[in-house]
Image 1: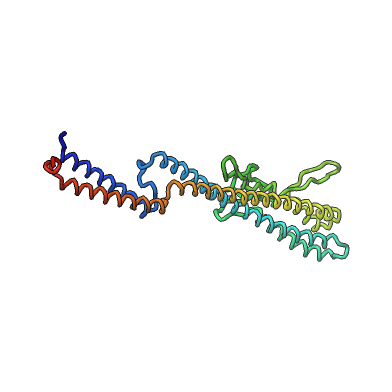
Image 2 (image 1 turned 180 degrees about the horizontal axis):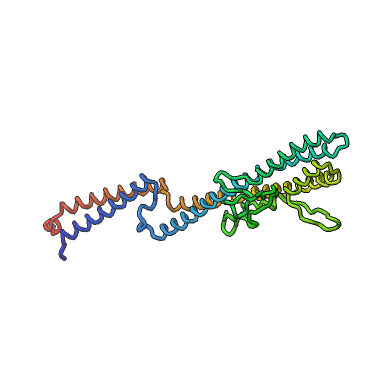
Length: 306
């Protein structure tokens, strides 16, 4: 039987090279913490990693949208709360106005403050966020939502639709405040016929009644202020519910992100205990291969014949 020394040498060298490659790979895993250095090392695992990373990126995008949505709702909430406080003050002043103990001159002085508070309400209705968008313009965030005509009458020119932001798979939240649904008007009885009166018209009619000393209209205005206040209460309740929903969705996204990261880590990250054990085995295997090669190198055909 013919024995090829070159073949024996080749086998020994190949064995040592293979072990050295495995050692280098394991050392890289221990140094970088990545179990998969190249996609070709484990194509299936690499594909799973890409899918998981895509899912994580999507959750991160949802998280950013949630922050954006919450900021816009927070701006709305702050403005409506401030407007509610202003309206409460208007009611307090109106109660004084309708009192029989208030003199005509005092009514006029009180009316000056009411008119100033009305202007504050208009300013709050046209609140902008940190990006310069109007928070009560619906989808028309670049247009002043409440505008006055040449006679000073204010009307809502914003959009009636809201801005929807994706905050999860098949889940959206509406953040574009529709001003007409926040600064709601009243239904006024005119000789048995209900007529819709806008928010600012109701306040303007109240100040006109005070100017003219019309007691009946002042009493009507006092009642309408309560209706306007109920609109703010409803708006604050809705905003609060939306913000609570956002907080709940944040918890869902955090839990989903943690689960995805844990799964990705299980595929991507090096198990240091296993890797260190593998490295020790590979070093022993290399030593054995080197020892075998050394023995093979000493052999000759005459040694084999003996």
